[in-house]
Length: 229
Image (tube, rainbow, N blue to C red; front, side, top):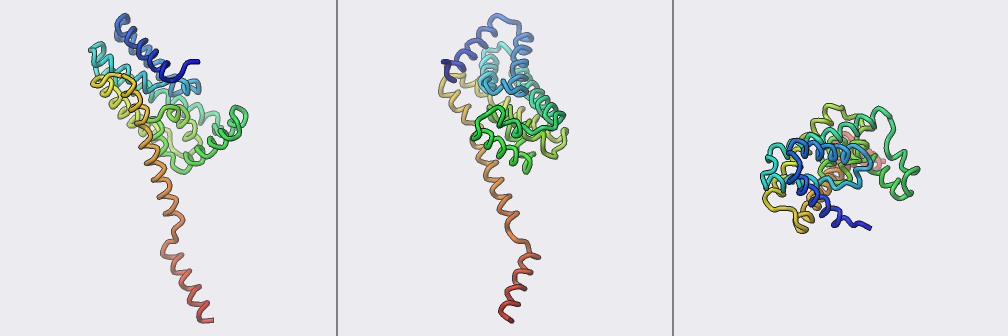
């Protein structure tokens, strides 16, 4: 059985081999196609997109491709994949969580349902943070599609997110390479984002539960009436 580390190593080795034997435009087109699938199709859950973009960074460091073309390719391809996923899910009009019990065990279906509910409440945050994390990048557009966010707003947020993500990974790959320590660090990049979104979600929920001035006034009136009686 191939583990994640072996798959990452194989992908990086393949990218470097292609970089030495394939014309840069064709190489970028091939990588773009894989990144579209990674972000746009459920099979993308098994594709380590961050490793691929890191490999693009390595090629930019070797001057096989330019930094600008590497960033543009990764950002545009991933954005296209996310938009395809969003449009397809919205046209079907079906939340992914509803198909969960048919495809996954009950616990996973329950997790999907919770993610769906979070996306419905905070679609902008999920659209912005989702593309930064492998796996979530594939599912987030499907979750957000069932919310009331507009396609234009989703596309803008996603494009900002994937451009920052691509620029960071290409820069890391170009400067530091792609050894095990670098890949481990890259795999943890999305963790602070998820934590931040969770904290914002908790803060917003707490604010909604806190009584506003009219409610506080009504509560005080009831207390005064009780003591007067």
